[in-house]
Image 1 (tube, helix red, strand yellow):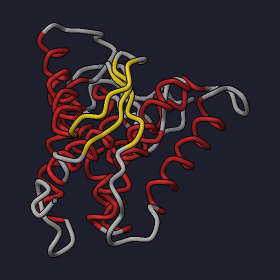
Image 2 (spheres, one colour):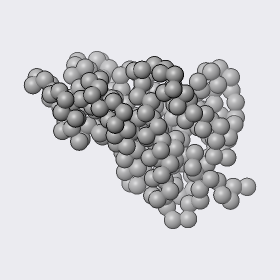
Image 3 (tube, rainbow, N blue to C red):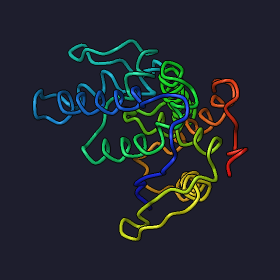
Image 4 (tube, rainbow, N blue to C red):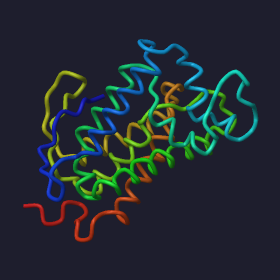
Length: 230
């Protein structure tokens, strides 16, 4: 629907978004080595071994003995670093690049890392509850990134964001409309069963977790809803 480009929202508490950049680099390296086929083969085995598959997690089926995998509880975190394609990776990392720095600024580096992983885990749990017997592995950072979106919406709804609407029309509009529209689209996609390969409820779960966690985890004195913005 839209491509985020830039938000011109300066950092106030940290000199640089080290964790955001590190997550982007780590996700890219993992995809290149384990999922792209450029270095190692076996993308499907990696997805089943380290993605979060509800049927495996809930013991409806067992992982084949020839596939090495993470313990079930750990897949709530490992799935966040696997992507099915370069486009899947790039779209998630672009949202993280544009919006992650200000959320990291509001939390601090280590709390942001914990926040990011917890949002991804919450997204995985939401998917587990909605599709407990699914045998398709959940992979991708979109649940964790949805948490970043939910947090940014609570922190900076009035900040204007440059986007490409429909991939070609440049607009500069408040984050409330950009990210609020993104959240509405998740519910529209659920209601009309658009692209059943996408875990829409995971996005919703991640965004809700982010909106809640930012309130309790932010630095003391960090305002919500752009209070004090001139």
